[in-house]
Amino acid sequence: MSRHYLMCAPVHFDVTEKSNPWMRPDHVVDRERALSQWHTLVEVYERLGHRVSLLDPVPGLPDMVFTANGAVVVGGRAFVARFRSATRQPESAAHQRWLESTRYDVAMSEGIGEGEGDFLFTGRHVLAGTGFRTDHATHLEAQEFLGYPVISLRLADECFYHLDTALLPLDADTIAYYPGAFSAGSRRLLERLYPDALLATAEDAGHFGLNAISDGHHVVVPSDSTRFADHLRDRGYEPIPVDLSEFRASGGGPKCCTLELRPAAE
Ligand code: ARG
Image (spheres, helix red, strand yellow):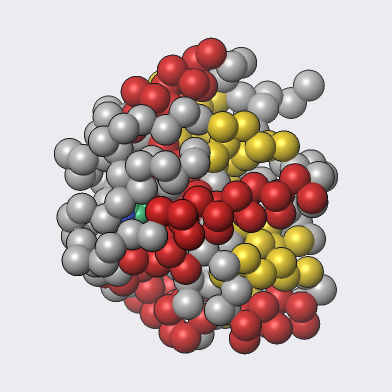
């Protein structure tokens, strides 16, 4: 099924602070390289038959390329982020304006909540991360607004600071995740909900393999996650490798650059 994604060109991409352990403010960003990798990702989606809409980049917002964090959009309702870092806070207004100008019902998060970074829709419910960025209380806000059950998961390893670095919905029934990123209780919960999940290793997760996008068959994965891609193939998915290495110095991968827009059912 064709998907609709919101993306933002990395024309102002930079690494200016260290709000996750991957961020390297000393790294000199190669913006040409970042732009070319990002364009390839857009082309990959279009080749797969998906629709890509673009958010205008705003000068002075170095992380705006990571549109996944701007909102979570389910059933025509967009729950817009409130960011933890002051640098990223102005991104919310840009998302709000864009989503309001389209056909989405928009609510701004009152508590800290970082969109699809921490809220992942599986088709049945929303799996939600807390521990580093999104406040636990924001999970209830999201549930009230989206009208889907929101299942809270506690992230326990700073390297996997957003849920989308540790867990990947593959289709309505299956997820992949890295157990080491979660608290013991959340691991038990995931085992119970998804006994057949694809378990990623520390190495897979370290290559950002879970920061991927599945349309139910194709899975767009970072090109260095070769072992994880093999596991996906064994399960009947078709991995599509993309090189987004320039974004790793900011703690980002393909999923971070992609916000899925899910309209109301027609
Ligand atoms: N530098 C960004 C941050 O720390 C990276 C965001 C990555 N996005 C994601 N969906 N995990 O906020």
